[in-house]
Image (cartoon, rainbow, N blue to C red; front, side, top):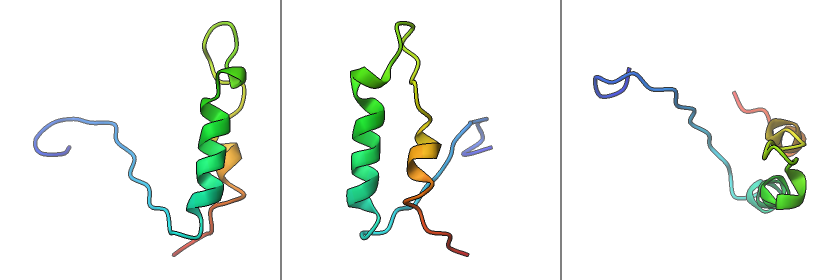
Length: 57
């Protein structure tokens, strides 16, 4: 619940050092060449971003 309404929301944080590589990963993921005939992405954004993101506790 957020502000009295049901929501499916994910919040993410990125540090400055991670952004240039993550930006490239997002651009490759959003490229029309990464979409199949049905419009679905061929690759998983999480799989693209996982190696870039650092574990923070």
